[in-house]
Length: 340
Image 1 (tube, rainbow, N blue to C red):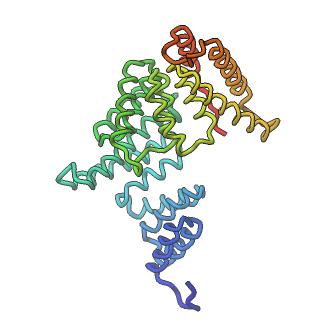
Image 2: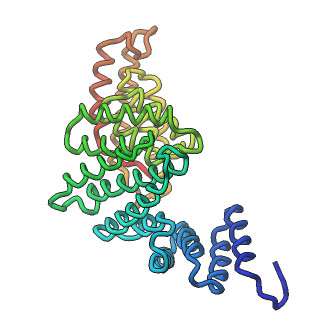
Image 3: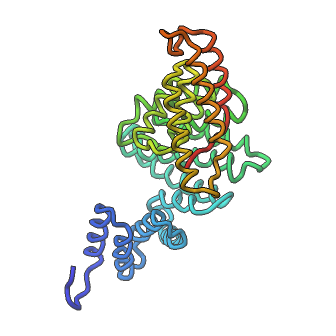
């Protein structure tokens, strides 16, 4: 892009930055946005782009500065920047930025005559997600607040008023119900979450791996093992190097009395943990989990070996099935973290 001593226009610099973003080169792209900003220091679109890319590059100080400048210049333009900045702070400050963003989104929504128009649905989705994040804030950073549970409930219910059929609000409320030990209500919400994942989410709109893994764990907690297995095996198609996923799916198969598949998944988990232990040596931090998996593998092998030759531990063998299910329920309800 050489041009001697001639200066490129801001538009040319932005075009180059956008091309670099498309080429997955955010480090270079942000440099071109910064050069364009020198020419147009009041351009909030440039500031927002710099903020978003800086967040992606983990340059949180620059991201925060860019978004704050943008908010000072044009608070109502691009309300999403309020939600971005909320992710860069914590506690009540995060709540403040999120609620401000929601206020501006609501104003934008009021401009749409048809609430079901595509553009309106996009805004409703953003509002729904923002309310979910507020509820989750009171389950994490602000969980010790005296009104934490009340505010969680309030924000999750608000999220549902802007529901566009995606799984986030029902999963969020299910999580709260589990914390409240209302398993029956959580079960219904998780079944709806599972339905939405399958019916309303295409390949391009699937929630994150973390979201789907959390959904799988919750389904295990309410003993919906078949659905949990389906969700978690879907995650494994994108990430099969996570030992925890092999453990969780093995737990599902064991609960469903499919002992041969359960053994396969637990053995794979065992192999991965042993490999990790060899790599980390004295820094290995999952010894308890490894020992638990080894015990499970041994128990499954013993159970399978005790079955008649024509049986493999499926529903035909009630005694071994009940024993396996009891063990799986206990294992499924443990908060086992095996992320490498």
